[in-house]
Image (tube, rainbow, N blue to C red; front, side, top):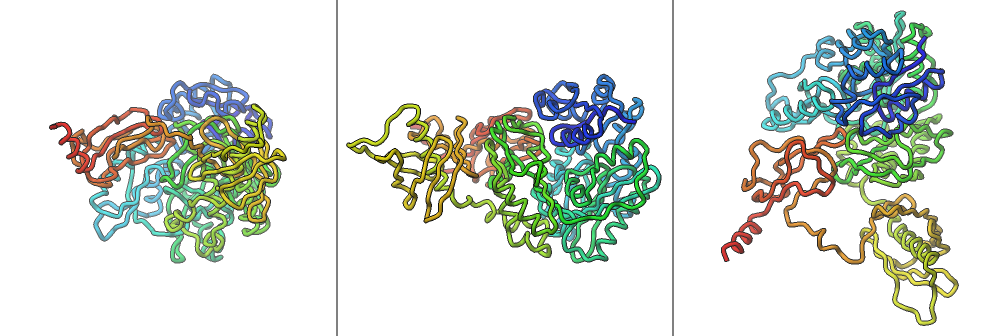
Length: 633
C-alpha cells in the first residue's frame, strides 16, 4: 500500500494530485525551486523539499535531486504529474532503482511512445527528411514533451534551418531534450484525442474522446469531452487504434493518444505517456478520478473489465496570465483577487494560485483550469461562459475575455466548424475591448470620489466649481457633486448615478441599471466589474518618453538569443528577428519595426529584463541622417 506520495512537479499539477492523495489518506510531499518557495503547492503539501535554484534545468528537471528529496521526506512513491520529467524513462528507472513506487508507465513503454519520432516508427510513419517546396507547409516539432513548445510552422523553405535551430533550443530548455523532427502540416484539422487507462492485468480502457481544437501557439486553450459531432465509425476507429497502440508497448497507467482529424480521416500525432492537462473533462464526463485510478494501478490492483459509461458533456477552459491582443505575451505580477462563482459546487477549479499570490516569470503562465459539466454540450458551454464572465480576477492581464468571447462565438457553437484555425480566423474580433468599458470608467471615478469624500470631507457648494476630471485608458470622465450628496456625470453623456461608494457604484445607462464592484490596489489600475482600467495621470511624466524606434521588452524574461553577428551600426530590414526573449515557457521574437540602422543594442544572452526595458533602437534613414547632420554642425 502506498502511504506517502511525492509529486515531481509544481503548481496546479501538484495541487491536483495532492487533492486525491488527501482523499485517499496518503501523505503528500512537494518539491520546490527558490522561485516557488511560497507557491500554493508548497503550502498545501504535508512536507516540502527545496531544490536550490530557479531554472527548470537545475530544479524540476533534475531527476537525481527529486529522488533524493523523496527519500529524505520518507515518501514511498513518486507521481510525475504532467510535464517536466513525466515522460522521462531514465527518471522512471531512477525512481524504481531507489526502491520507490513509480506511478506511471514502464520505462520501456515511455521510450516507445514518449518520443514522437519513435512512436511514429512503431506505427510505420516516417518523418520528413529531405524537405522540398512541394512538402510545404511543414511542422517542426520537439520529439519530447508537449504544450506547443519546440513547435514551429514553416511555410518558406529558406526559414526551415532557422526554425529547426529555434525549436531545438526551446525543446532543450523546456524538456532537457533538443531532438526535433519535421512532419507535414495539416491545415485547420480537428485535434481529437483518446484517454487511456491500463492496468498490469491486461485490461485497457479507452475512456472516450476529447476535442482540443481551440489552440494558440499549438497549445490547447479549450477542451471538451466527448469530442462533439464525430461520425460513429470514426470514433470507434480512434478508440480501437488507441487501445492497440497501448497493448503493443505493454502500456500501464494513464496515457493519451492524439490525432488530427481532417476530411473524415484521422492522422496519428503522438502518444503522451502520462496524464494530460485536460484530463478533468474526461473525469467529469465519466464520473471517475483518474489520479485515484493511477494510484490503484500502481498498487497492482485490477481495473474492472469495462469502463463506466459516459454521461453528459464536460468542458474546460485554461485561464492564462497573458495578453491575447499582444501576441499572447505572458504577464506577471500580484494576483490581488481571484474568485470564480460556483467554485466547488457547479464549477470545478483546478489551480495553483489563490488571491494574493504572485505570478512569476519562470514557469507556464496558466493560472487555472475552469471546468463544468452539464447534460448537453450547449448547456455546458453556456454554464462555463457565465462562470468566466462573472469571475473576479484582479491583477495581471488574462485571457478571460477571450475565453468568454470564444465560447459565445457562433463558430464554436457549431461542432461542424471546429478546427485548429479558429484563432487565426477570429482573433482580431475576439480581442476587441468588451462593451461597457466607458461606464466602468465612470464607476471607477465615482468610487474614488466617494473614497476621497470619506477621507477628506467636502461635497456640494453654493458656488459650484468646475467639473472634476478623471481619465482611465482612452476614457475621460467628468462629474460634479450634487446638493443631495450624490454626483452628476457630465461626460460621458447618458449616465445617471444611482449610488456611489468607495467599493461599488450603481449607474443607470440608457435606461438600464448596472452595478460595478470597484477595487484599487495602488498598482496603476482600477478594477471595475469585469474591466481592468489603466489609471491615466493628469500630467504626463517626460521621463516616460522613449526615442523613436525603441524596442521595449514586451514581457519580463530572459534574453536567450541575439541574431548571429548583430552589432550596432548594422542595417536591418523591417520584420527581421533581432533577438529572442523567453518567459514562462514561451519564446518571443523581437523584430525590427522598420528598415533602418541599429543604433543601440542593450540585450545580451542571459540578461534578465523587466517589462518595458529598452532592448535596442532601430533608427530609420531619415532619423539617422538628421542625427549625423546635427553632429557635423
